[in-house]
Length: 313
Image (cartoon, rainbow, N blue to C red; front, side, top):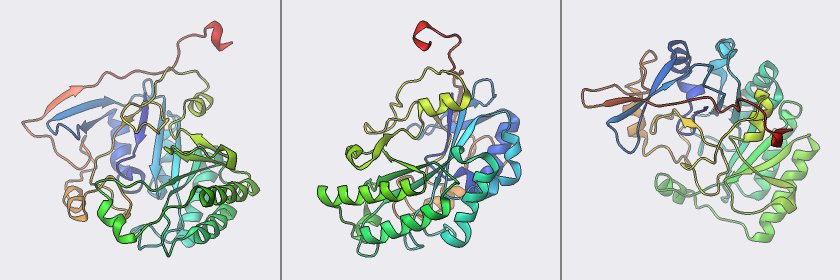
């Protein structure tokens, strides 16, 4: 089993105490976002958790307890963009705070376990291609030697972020301008010994030196855990997404980063209401079990192949 922690909310930043407590207890609950009365119990034993993928804009709250992950394999997807507080409201200052945190995490766990996400890219009058190239170059210089991979994507419009995105007046590049922009991104990254890949993009940028990416990547995880795994594409993700199947443990409308482009929050009001329900000792993130809920233990198992076949040799 691959654990996604989390696409829906920034667990490392805001709920790491809850997560570490759940590892200690050996299980957690996930409420079905479609059927609110269905709750799945997920066993968190190292015997069934093959890898944990953390998604975050600030992992610093986890630093003092990283040793509690010693029995697990894991890596971080660390989002670090050039946006200011007008778009990423609660993210601390990038140069003064976030870049040093990235460097510190890389020093603690190794650069191959920290993937830089310059994601998503939004073009506006303020954040035009020239601005992004300058910001990307500045960050890449600071992260040189602290990561070997950068993931980029271009903003998508969803129901939950449509109104906020419209207020930013975003624009999209022509095919020619996009090619020129991406070639420059790849060139900058290459100068700092980084490969660039896209996240859930239909456009083929291989001619720019940018490959398609799987954020939850089978080959990457196999190399990390030293074993072949049996896994399929995650059917719960977009068609363009190449990620392998995982169990998502986050809760919608609980992320306090306040990003304008967020697809996981309906409103600040709902986030505020849900966060009041946060209990670091509860099995459910930002929620309580009621008498109407039905709890079912989800059957989970390791994806590791038990033995080699002739095709593995």
